[in-house]
Image (cartoon, rainbow, N blue to C red):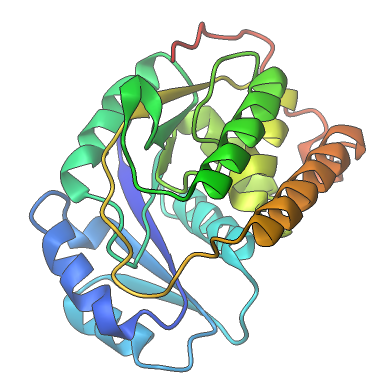
Length: 247
């Protein structure tokens, strides 16, 4: 199994070097690609100096577009598995193996901060939103999910085939809508518990108002994902035989 670790990155120069140094201890950097999504800082230069391959967008297109580029890169270069990994220090390289070992039971494995009683720090409002979103997405995926918005995940060969042909680029397309798209194509999804670090930089919104707005936007994304027609490039690509997914 050829595994590509894909890191979508926007202005991560302050922490990316440390992230790649840590990742190198668990995964060869020759099999890592940084998708520089229109950064204005030295993100791309730091990535190249670390020895990873870099694909740059001239402008910021969002995480969905960055991961779409990563899946196309994987397909062109003979990789059959893609691990999505953040460049901000939240994801732990030693847990990549936990994602990969679960690909024998599902096409997509999501690293969950909340499965098996996980205690990831989050405000009450944000956690309530995350539980609600997970419940709704679980209905689409036909399996229990607790962390549908987690960006720490692995995609196996069938998922790479689908996502290289089309990947949702709208806001939250890389997490929520990609699960809906995958299940509509007959792919299966499961979770595995993971621990994550706090953000090395930036600050997540915490207010009830923002959490409510976030919920509304997620529901809108789910409605669109469920009713929009199959993209032309995916017509004829369907996996009818489903493997039983465990969570």
